[in-house]
Image 1 (tube, rainbow, N blue to C red):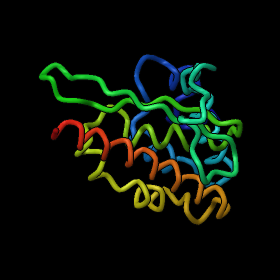
Image 2 (image 1 turned 180 degrees about the vertical axis):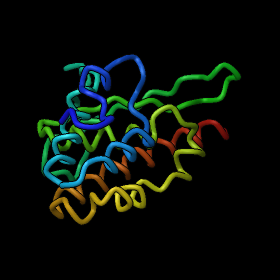
Image 3 (image 1 turned 135 degrees about the horizontal axis):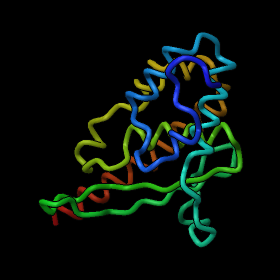
Length: 160
């Protein structure tokens, strides 16, 4: 997939994370779903390596047909606002790409921003809901639930 203005893998894996707008723009340039699926897989290949030490039961996402691990870290911004950062991995290439899309939606946001973002709506807007198997869609929903639960816990911790 190197047609048009689509970034190649080397460009995706640079210091700048792929944004949701990047993904929307690239999807608009790809006419068929085979190319879009290849693109999603490339997004997954560009994810940073996930440490073996983080492949724990606590980080495992339940409800996914594939093996999926998500790790949440809370960092402070320059003004002290807590921001949620995520790492993740899967044993399935396409699912790794879905994790990359999830991170484009949620990574680096405050808990309140994260809880206000509708990943399911974005998933539908990209056409993924109608082009993935029900198992993959359910797995994505489980990942969203996990991220939102972590954001809810971070928001509760901030309030106390």
